[in-house]
Image 1 (cartoon, one colour):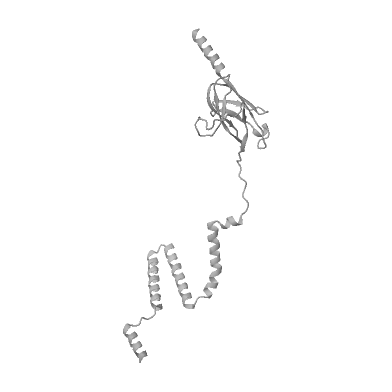
Image 2 (cartoon, helix red, strand yellow; image 1 turned 90 degrees about the horizontal axis):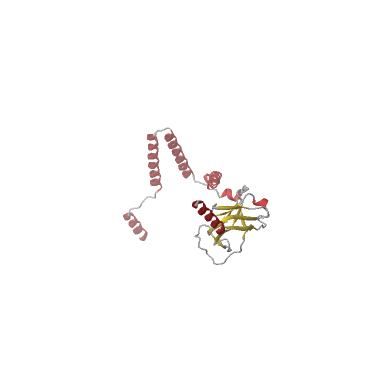
Length: 232
């Protein structure tokens, strides 16, 4: 009997100290009506207590005990400000201040907001990205496209470059191309010995061509004799 009486008194005292948090949603151009808002709820501390939003924008969270709470709106399409709500008792008006998500419950400002709470939609979520139209400049900013363009330009310019080369340089280029082709074929066929021999032959030919192109060196004594003959 005593336990029943004590529990009844505690329930009555909790009901006396509890407060029904009242507020309203102020419609604006971003969210003009309840139909645009859709199924949303106003919650305290991420769902500790909640209240339904009516069609005229009002809401009520019943039997909120004393304490500090973060009031927010759970909405699929809209973003609202979060508020810090400090409930003292059922007789006094709760303190309402702005709150930044992720910070402590200590209020960042001493300025109180009006009560009943007024919430305004601040942002509308956009879950769809429009398809990008064709962009010629963006296409040429792609590295692969630049490589393809440069390769095509080199292929078009190669005949004009070959025409302006002297016959000896042209023959050397053709010989180098033939050696590279034979080396690639030998490597594809798995003949490593032929590939190595082709590389060595190419190095020897390059050394021989550079030696043949080098101008003959004149001995110092011959230079002195030539200078003496000129003086005479």
